[in-house]
Length: 181
Image (cartoon, rainbow, N blue to C red; front, side, top):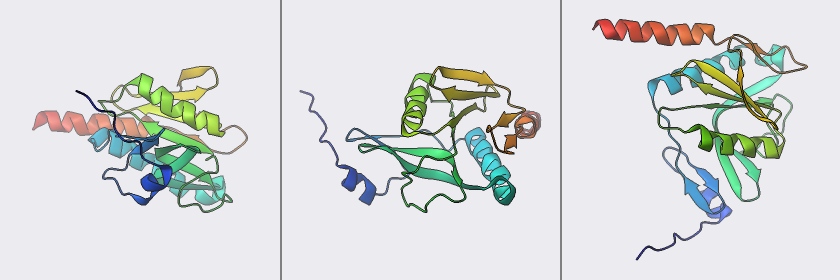
C-alpha cells in the first residue's frame, strides 16, 4: 500500500542542504535536472556576460540562487540577475530583474512553464528559458512562452542585450571536434 510522503515545512527546507539543490513546492522537494555539459556552458556564459557588465548594466548575477516565490515555494534559479541596488538576501525574496532557466535533456517544457509561472507570479518581469540542445531561446510572460531572437535578448528600459550566437557556436564547435575523436 502506498503512503503519502510527509510534508516538509519551509523552515526545514531552508535549514537543509541538498546536492544538487532542489526546489521546494507546497511542502515537497522537487529535484532539478542539471550537470550536463550544455547546461553548464550556457549557465556559465550568462554569468560571465552579466559579470563583465555589472557596473554598466547595474546588475548582480548569481547562479543556483534560491528564490522564495511564495510563502510555500522556493525555486532554485539557474541564473538570477539581481538589480545592483537590491537588498542582499540569502534566499532572494525581492523579484530579480531577470530569471534565466536552462533546459537539460530530461526537462520537459510543461514543468519549465510551472517554474517560469512562479517567477512571473512573484513579479519577475524578464524571464528567459534557454534550450541549448535545440539552440532556442524563449521569453515567458502573462501570455505564455514565446520563441525569442537568441541574437538579441534584451531587458526593456536598460542597456542589457545578450547574443547567444557565440555560446551556441562554441557548443557546435566542441561537438564537431568530439565527433572526430
